[in-house]
Image (cartoon, rainbow, N blue to C red; front, top):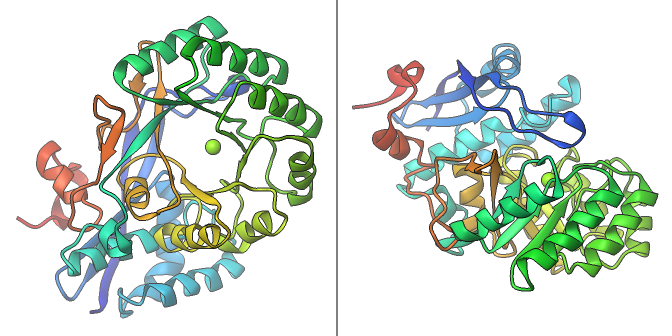
Length: 362
Ligand SMILES: [Mg+2]
C-alpha cells in the first residue's frame, strides 16, 4: 500500500467555554484541522487536531513531501521519521503525531477491525470519571458531584481553584459529601510550587483520593522526586512532557510516579501512547488515559493497566464535552465501533462535516 495524498481540511468550530483555575478558559471559537491521508488501496485515514492552521503548515511544508509514496503500514518507521523532522522543526507536541493516528485508522480499516483490537484488545467497556471544570464555590462543586452521582458516575476528578488551602478544604468536604465508595481524584494542572503541592497532597491523602495529578509543571523530575518523598498519595504524572516514552522513562526511573499519563494527542499518537503504557506495565505502574473522544476510548479498551475513561464536564446543570461516545447510566463507556477509529461509523449516524464530503465514499 502507498500513500497518494495528504491534506488538512480546516473547519471553524464554536464551542461553549470551559473554565479553568485562575480565570483561564478555553477559546470558544477555534479552527480545527482534519488530517486526511489517502492511499492507492482506496482506504482513507482520518485524524483531527485542535490547531488546524498549525497542522496545515506542517503538512504543506514538511509532511506531504515526506509521506507521499510511503507504505502507511510502516507506522514505526514513519513515527521515527516524524521525530527526525521534529529535531529540525520542534513541532508543537500535540501536532507532530496526528499522522500516526491517521495511519492507525488506515491499518485498522485494512484489517477490518476497530483500532483497539488491532492494538490488542483488552476490554469492551470501562468506567468513566466525571472530570470537572472549575466551578465558582465549594457548595457548587458539591452540587455538581451530586448531579454526577445521580447520572451514574462512580468516580469524580476535580480541576479545582488552584489555591492549595481552598482545594484542601474542598477535597475534605467532597469526601464527606459523597461518602467512602465514590472514587475521587485531583488534577492540579500545574498550579502549584513544591510547598503548596506538599500541603495539598497531605489533605488529599486524608480525604482518601485515588490519585494526585500534575500538581506542578513537569519540567523538573527532581522536584517531583522531592514531592514524592514528602507525600503518601499516589502521583499520576507525565501528561504534558514532550518526548513520549523518552521523557516518561525518567518519572519511572526516579520511582516517583505510581501512574503515567497516556493520550494520542500529547504522547505521540497511538504508537507513543502504547509504548508508554507498556513501559509503565513493566514496572507495575498504571497508564491512565488522558482526555476524551473516540481515539482515547480505543486506548482505554487496549491498555490493560488503565482504569478509567476521562469524561470532561462543564456548566451547571452539567453537560458532557464529548458527545461522540455516550456514558451509560452506570457510568460506563463501551468500545467504539470500527472499522478504524470509527469516525465514518459516527458520521453515518450523526452526519459528517460538510467540508469532508469529497473524501467520503458512498
Ligand atoms: Mg490532567
